Image (tube, rainbow, N blue to C red):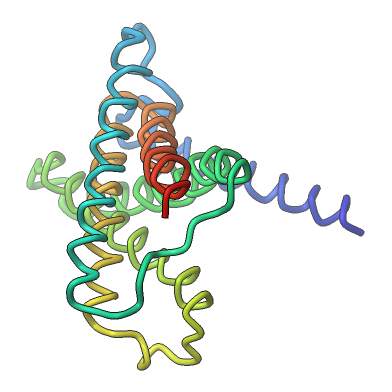
Length: 203
């Protein structure tokens, strides 16, 4: 049964990934990676932006703790945090950037095609996906902190999740458009390494 479920998940993600790839190419984006692009832009720059994103979340979380008493956000235990960072970098970027962001950009480009505002519509798609990405990160902490309804969640905590994860979502979105899915995964992975693996080992 477990193997069958894994197979269904694998096939499901594969189909969603293919759809996202198709839509991203329709948008004129690189898709998986930009052919002929330098290793610096495909691997090194995502590492740099990932570190920036991770530090932004660390500093931001410490700041927001001044306004609520929930304490530190949960982190996976080491070494599972490394595997979690790798898995999240792939599956969340597949759903949020390769699929969701590509879909919204495609729709918006169709609607505003006559206005020739692709740069503008791409940015709207980036922000939409980043917002959904930020809000989706409420699920783990909500379970950890024992909230039983959405109304119990402090507004400042919702703002925290939206801003901190949304920033990373914007960065990964722009990297996706410029250099492809691999660059977005790289930013996400290294941000999680800084946030969950390094910082999470000390709190």
